[in-house]
Amino acid sequence: MPSRPGLLECIERYFAVAPQPDARIQAAGALDVPIADPAWPYPARPRGGGARVSADDVRAAVALQRAAGLPAALEWIPECSPEVAVAARAAGLAVEELPLLVADDPVDVVLPAGIRLFLVGADDPGLPLYQHVAALAFAHPGGVTDAPEVPPEQSAEAQRRTAVLRERIAEGRTVMMVAMEHGRPVAVGSHQPVDVEGTEVSEVVGVATLPRLRGRGLGAGLASALTAHARESADLVFLAAGDDDVARVYERIGFAWIATTAVAEPPQA
View 1 (cartoon, rainbow, N blue to C red):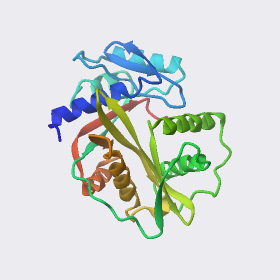
View 2: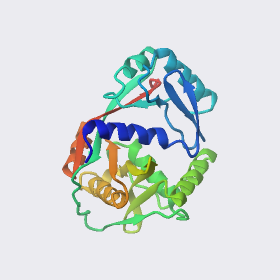
View 3: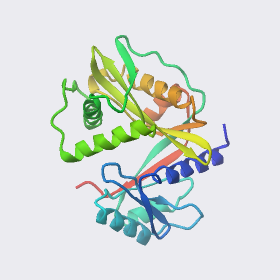
View 4: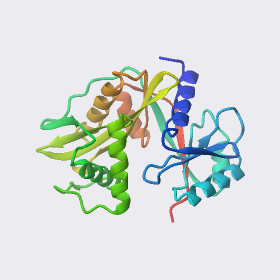
């Protein structure tokens, strides 16, 4: 595995390359702002090259995002751009730092009894339901929340996001897995491979388990399966954990905690 500086540089390149197929990149001072379909937005990020990000840069980036109908969002690796947090807070954004981990020595995890994993195809009619499972899982930190047999009627915005996701799956830019119990989805997750100057890199994202099944190792098993699939072709697999406790779960399945990733958004009212 490359050294830590090499890893962080590679991950930064991943984030710079990922939006290019479907976004135009606009400059806001030392920030790059991908302008893409609001159904699949990308955050602004510091541009490589060492220029320091200022609060004015952040304000300009947010203005570009809002003008394009995109959520105001900025992401970066603090170990690479330590000044950005100060600039983001000065521009009125709230900053959250999350653990950044890479797959080091992955461990196969046995799934709970009765659970089966499936790769999701682009034409899978259950895709809206799988997206609904993820939304339920992220919205409810605990309890017995379960998914309905069919998703609620989708808004036009949700339909557009489903259509974009189908396109990404068909193109191989998103690889999605769903965990089924008794024929019903109970957990979902994805990895997103990107060719970074001839090296494939993939990020594991959106691993979500319905509350009633948490604590049984399903999320770890799904993340392990996604990582194994990604490593069939990727030289580097990484993820951002939701908090330190989640990061420790990923460490137990063979991820190494190497740095942090930061997210800045307008504070919630």
